[in-house]
Structures are given as structure tokens and as C-alpha cells.
View 1: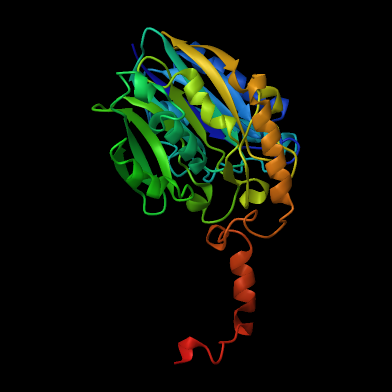
View 2: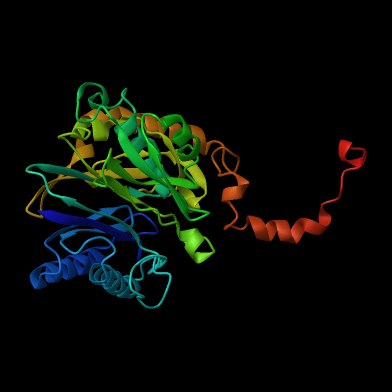
Length: 371
């Protein structure tokens, strides 16, 4: 059976501040999803969330970028925005950058990750939802899952994985894409994906085919809006087992709370903390950034689950280390490396301050440039 998995997310109002989702917004999303399933628009659904972001996790048979599915998501977020305004929620409708739906969600604000594939006899899928970070946050774990044998031993000992995988990397500034084959082009790829603010892994494919095995959302809100409106809070889906990373291999990268950008006002580096579903509400300095993992078994398009994959106690050390890193970075206050570098601050107050003070900058005398 060919099925499409769509994860479409948006921040349409925070409770309280940027920390959680109000029950009225949850109810609105649930009602709309149930109605869509009843009408046959979608096969199955789950309403996920991380922090103040709601993710509509849906299965259907209409393929990626489908106008009906995208319109449904947009109209759901519009109704949730109405509820957010009714209850005075913070940043109501902040991810809806236009007033009307225009065919699909590209450039409209909500993030989405979609892939179409032939469902296997057993189809384990993990949906990762994040808050207070950017799409490039998925570069590190995707590399570890699909290209690093120290993380994924299947790359060494599973004959069906030994040839490696194909990575589609997007340049978000130039709006271009490139395919890298691993392991042979691993070093070339790392040159780019090691700069996650600009280069982002969008898809991972099986070698020698166009079958997708992982997909991320790559929408950058500030690039679409031309101003800072909030962090992107990306989502990701990863298929597992039977020639793909085992579930444990797909989760293992998050045992290390690596550093991502985002956190307070989208302008700071912080540890990416794996948390269970009960702990997905960031409050300390509006963070630190966090990620939840929802595990599903897909059967005839039905989402059996989820299992709370980071609810496992074996991630306690990662959480403790994340809190120690948070303490360390917070002591830097407005100084780098806690605060993002200037080239990533251009949508904050930095340009206004530079403009105000530009006449007070005087050329240095007696420097090498004078000769």
C-alpha cells in the first residue's frame, strides 16, 4: 500500500508566553482532524505538540504537496488562531504569514515534512517534534543515523545498508539543492551540513532509488517574513528497521545533547534536550531547546501509537548534561557563543542599532590600510 505521511506544524498561540498549548487549541485541532478522517480526507491522524507548537500528523493517499491536505491544515490553524485570540494567547497566529491560502503551504509560515512510500509489512516510524530551534537542528542526528557507523552499526554489518544512503541538502539562502552519496561523498557533505543555519538536510533516500526514508521541514520563518517572527521549531520523520537504521540507532544521536541555535528570542545557542511528552514545555529562558520522539507502527495507513520514545530513563544522563550545558552557556549572557553571531542577528534590533550609530564610527588612522 502506498501511503503519504504528512507532519504539518505551526505556532498559533502560546500558553503561557511561549511555553505550552492551551486546551482550547488542542480541542480545535482534534475536532478538525476527527472530521477530516470521518470525511475520508485522511486515513488516520495524531495531534502532537512540543512546547507551543502543534503538529498535525496525518496519513493519506494523496501524495506530498497536496492542495486539499495543505488547505485543511491551513484552515485548522486559522480556527486555532481564533481560539488563541479568544483566550488571549501569546503570539496568536504568529506562524500564519499571509491572510489567505494560495494553493499550498510553501512560503506561508507553517512547517511541513512529507513523504510518500510503499508501506512495508512492518513499518516503524518515529516523528520528531522540536521547539525553540531551527531546521538545521536535524543535520547532526540524520548524519549520525544514516552515515556514521559509530552510531549505526547496521552500516557495517547489515548487507542491505552497507552501500550507504543519499542525502538531499538544501541551501536555504540560495534556494538550491544538491544530492550527496555516502559514504563516498561524506567529507564533501560535511563541509555544508556543518553549517546548519544555511544548509539543511531535507530528505534521505535509499541508495540507487528515490524511496524516501527520512524527511524534515526546512521552512525558515525569518527568510519568508523578512523579519523575526519566531523560531522555526522543525519536525522530522524517520522510517526504521529492515534495511534502515534500527529504532535504537535512530534514537541514539539524541543521547548527546548537542548544541543548536534558537532558545530565547531565537537568538542563542543551547543544548538540544530529549524529553518525554510530559516534559515538552520549555520555561527556563524560554528553553532550553527540546525534542520529543513519537514512535508509531504504520499498518494499512493507520498510526498505531504513539510510544513516548524519550520517556525512557536511559536519556536521564543526556538531560542532566543538557542542564549543565545550559548553566554554562547562560553565564555568557549577551556574549557569544551563547548569543548567535552577528550574521544571524540581522532580523533582530542589531541593524537598527548599527544604523543609529553609523555616523559615530570613525576611520582608524595609522593602520596598514592607510598605506
